Every structure is written in C-alpha cells, then in structure tokens.
Length: 495
Image (cartoon, rainbow, N blue to C red; front, side, top):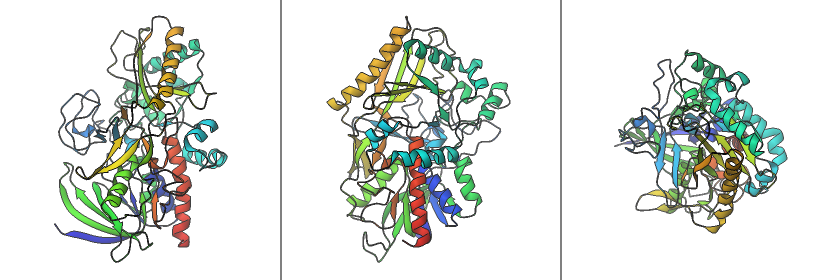
C-alpha cells in the first residue's frame, strides 16, 4: 500500500480537552493545523440513537474489541467510544472519537484546593496564576455549570438529594459541582421532548439526547468553523520521528505516519505528514504509547528518561445500600460532590453521586465515583512483543494504605450516621478512567509542555499531570490553555 505524503504547519494528535483547546487557540491566531483523531465523528441527531447504552450495548461501546469491563455482552468489532486496555495491577479506559473523553464522561469539572494542587503537582505551576487566569478560562471554554435548582428538585434527581441528606447527617460538606451539561436539553429530556439519557443515567457510552457539552460540538466546532483546522477522523498514528533528512532532536521538524481506517478497523490508506510543530494530545494512554514506541524503536532515542513515569490514578468507585428507595435510575450526571477531610491535603476524599441504571430496585443504592490523592507510582513501559505501552501499577504497595483508609473512614462516617445503610463495595486502583501522567510536567517537559531536548515537540494533555486529587478534566483544560498560549507564541514568532 502506497504511503501518501503531505505537509502541515502544525499537527495535533488527539481531540480531547488538550487537543481541542490547542486547536481552537491556533485557529484564533490564524494558524493552520491538521488534527489526527483515531476515532470517528459521533453526530447527535433527533433520532436519539447515536450511541450505545448500558441497557443495549453493542460495538459502539468499545474500541475494536468484542469485550468491555462495562458490560457483560459480547460486542461486534467496531470503532466505539472507549478502549479497554489490561494492565499489570490496573486496567485503563481511554476515549476514542472526535471529542475524545468528553463524549463518554461525567463532564465533572472540579477545582483542587491550593494544598491539594501543591501536594499532587508540586511547584511547577503557580496556583494563584492558575486560579486567577487559567481555571476561569477553562470554565469559560467548556461552558460548565452546576445543576439548576428546578432540575435538582425534580423526581429524576431524588438519588442526589438523598445523598446530600446523608452527607448532612454525617457532617460531611457537599456542594453542587460544575458539569459540562446543556441543562436546557436535560429539561427537554424530563418533558419527553428529547430521548431520556442523562436523567436515566444512560451516559457511560455517550449521551443520545445531546445534553453533553462534548468538545466536537463546542471548541472543535468553533475551530473548524474558522477554516483553519482540518480534522481527520479514523486516523491512527503508527509512528513519529524526525523529518526526512534531519537528525532526532535537532529541530528540523517531525514526520507522523498514520493509517486511515474504516469503522471496523481495517486500513484503507497509509499517510505521512511532515510538520515543524507536533503536538501530542492523545491522552495519557495514547501519548505514552506514541512516545515510548518512538524511543524504543530508535526514532527519537533521546526522549527523556522520565518518560513513562509518575502515572497516577485517584479514582474511587463505591456503593452503599440499605437505605430508603431513592430512584433506581439515579439521574445523572453526578450532581453533587462531597469533600471529606478537606483540611488534610494529604488525604481528602471527594465523592460524587454516580448514576447506576442497573441499581437494584427497592434496595436504596447510592453509587459514587470520586477521588483521593494517591502516590503516582504507576509506570508505562514499552513491550516490544505487543508493540505497545503497558502500565504497571503496584496495587499492593503500602503507600496506598493511607488512601484506602481515607475512603473507609468516609464511608464508615456515612454508614454510622445513616442507620441501616452499609458499604457494598469500595474499589480504588483497579480500572482507571482518570489515569494521568507518564510525561511529567517540569521533568519530561518544561512548564509549557515542550518536550526536553526536542524543539517543536509538545505534549498538551493529561499525561503531563501526575495527579490532581479530584477528577482531572478541569485541570487538564486549564493547563492546556496555558500551554497553548506558549505554543501560539512559539509558532507566531518562529521561536
């Protein structure tokens, strides 16, 4: 198969929060860019059938796999919205599709406290600068807002109100959390004017009502409308390296090899694109995959030794039962956030009520998803037999004992304050949808995501962050906005 070659001013790999912010800022600055996204577009229309659902899963739920940990069904092979990758000690979930993880996430936007920010991110970034400039910019870009009172007080969100009541009895502070949700669309779900998606908790594989403010409909749409951004879906990057005739790391530009595939994963055509500026925004899994392969194969042998290190996962999944019936559908997305132990930056616990459409009726379940600071001890390594990055996570390391104890403490407080309730399960560090790190900011890169020793190579996504201690999407977006400003300056000044 012949490899077609072309050139671009800037190439972005990945269309999640980092890639979308970068694409928009470049377009606003009048810079042309090509964005390569391995997944397909997922246009939401009035049919309400764009995505698979938990109640009717099919191949749209998984990336080129017959199985998914989120369903027991055998799936047809298709380029679905979530890739599942088994690891050593932790399995990963990674988004796929134009819009990345924003297609199939809770859209929870949490601001970490100053103590938590310093505990997880150190002093590479100035917290005051982030809070005064970049976090507000991230909120504006995403368009997030908390659940309105009329929606919260409806019958669809009885589970959220029940959780809030339990938290108050336990003396645990809570608040409404910012969410990337179109609340007018949710109101139309409630009246039947749109297919019921969020209000029934059917959002794990995408939101068929269009109530999700996914990036394909917001930032990427704005960037494409400028005429400056060329989005190429179903384009899987297979290799990167120095541009032909240049040496690795000498600033002579980069080549990106990618395959165009069909919706079943079959290669349709092969391409090579050459660029002076290459931005890797393929998410924690995708960016580590690309860079580790480039170093191991000798394409970019001088990539930093820190590559693949400081991988963190603060995600916690719990369920409690034995309380009054509180609406089996448990309307979503997560409406409120509990913050226990906020005065202890080493061990605070954040819990969000998480919709579980399959919760047993009549048993009064409350499912939560949240986070607790945990050491960033995970490591990505390149496996030549698999030609892939593999995550090793020391799940039994004693360093995680404190995180588990914090979760147990919070759940025990809830159970003690709400007689009859009990913890059904609590899980940390087995399957991660919020895994971050591997290209640590300030070590593998400078504070703007420029890869050390490789002029023109940038990383702008969650792989820069060893952890956030809260769901990471808002911090990923804020850091991306900051890094994109530096990238635009580099491009426009020729630095």
